[in-house]
Length: 229
Length: 365
Image (cartoon, rainbow over all chains, first blue to last red):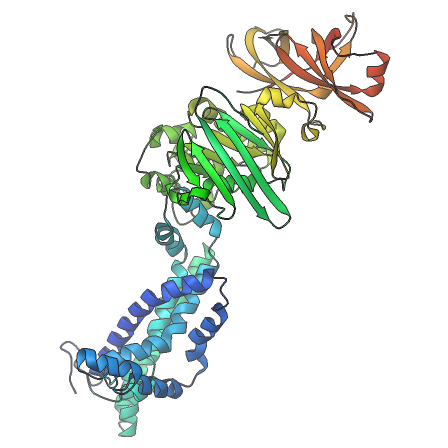
C-alpha cells in the first residue's frame, strides 16, 4: 500500500486519495455547474425540463447502473474511452482520471441543484440596477449574482464534496481497486471487511462517520446564521 | 407630438413597442437642461418608456439621440448595451445591493465609469445627500428615505449624461417624501444634466419639473414647459381636483407682524403665508384652480389676501357643475375652477377683465 508522507496509519492512502478525488471533482463541478445552473435558472427553453431530469438522474439511479454505463462509455472501446486512449495512450477505466469523470457525473445534481435554487431566488431587479450602473452581464454576474448566492455556493461545495467522498458503487464499477490510483476510502473499508479486518474497517468507518457529521453540522450552522441576517 | 426647444441640443427619444393590448408610440425631444416630468396614470406606459430609454426593454424599435450622439437606433442596428449607455436610473425601489455597504454601493457605479462628464465628486455627492453618517451601514439598516437617497446618489456617481427617475418617492409615506424632496430640489439646482422624472403626483411634478409631458395610453398628448402645459384646458388628466397652475415670483418683502411673504410676479404682488425666502429669491408658487374665485367689482370686504386684475383667456366648454377658466395676469397664466352657474350669472365671456381672488401656496425651490 503506497502511503503519503505525513499520513502513515493504515488506510491513510485511500483516505488521501478520496480527499483528492473529492476536491478535484468539486472544483470541476463548480466550474461546469455554475453556468449550467445559471442557464437552467434563467431559460424559458423547452429543453429545460429534460435537462433538469438528466441532471437529477444520479439521485435515483443505482450507482451500479451508472457505473455500468460509464464503464461501457469510458472503456477503451467506448466512444469516450477510445478517444482518450488515442489522446493519452492510457485507458480511462481503472484510472484516477476516469474516476474524476465518473464522480463529476455522479455528484452533478448535488452541485447544480443548490446553485440553481440560489440563482432562481435572485432578484432580477438587482441585476438591472447593476447594468444601469455600468456593469456588463458578466461583471454583474460576478459582482452581484455570485455574492448574493454565496449560500448556494457553500451548499453546492459541501454537498458535492461529501457526496463524492462517500461514493462506492460507481468507483467499484469504473475504477476497481488499485491502490493509490482508484482505491478510495469506501473501497478500502469494503476490502478490510472482506478480509475480516474489522479493526481497520472500524477505524476508517469512524473517520467517515465523524467527517460526515461535522460537514453537515457546519452547513446547518452556517445556513442558520445566514438565515438570521 | 414634439416639444422642441430651439437653439439648444436636445435628447431625442423615439420608441414604438406593442405588448398585448398595450402599445407605446413616442416621438419627442426634451431639452438638455432641467427636469422633464412625465405625468400619467398607472398603466399609461411611463415605466415602459423609461425602460426603453435605458435599454432594459429590448423589444420594439426606437432611437435615442443625446446631444447629437446616436446611442440607439434599432433600425440601423446601433444599439449600445445597457451598461455602455451613460444613463443613471433611479427605480421606484432603491435596489441597493444588500451584500455591500452603503459606501460600496455608492462606489459600484463610480468604479465602472471610465468617462467622467459633469464630474461630481464622491465627497460632493455624499454631502449633497447628507450620507456621511450612513457610509458604513448595511442597506438593511437604512430607513426607506435614506435608502432612496443612497440610490439617487449611486446613480449620480455613475456620471450619467441623462438621469431617469421612475417615481422615486412612490414607495415612501408622506413624511419620508418630505424628507427627500429637499434633496431633489438641490439636485435640480446643482446638476447640469437632463433629468426625466416620472410621476403620477402632480404636486411633485409642480415642485420639481421645468418641462412637462403628459402620457396617456402610450402616447404623448401634451408637451411643453411646465407652466404652459398646466394651464391647458383640454387635458382631462390635468382638469380634475388637482388642476392648478404654477408661477414664479421674486420675494420682495416679509411682513414679520403677520408672518407673510410678499412676492412679485408679472401680474402684481402676492402674499403667501410663512417666511419662504429672502428678498430677491425666486420661488415657485402653486395655485390650485379651486383656490381662485372671480368677481366683477372690487370686493370691499374679503378675507382673501390677494385680489388682482385678470383677463379671461379661455373658458372650458362644460356640461357638468364645474368648469375651468384660463386667466391672464400680466404675462402669467392661471386656471380657476368655478361653477357653471356662476359663469352664467356673471355672464363671463372670453376677454372680460375682472378681479381674481387668489390663495397661493409656496412650493420650495
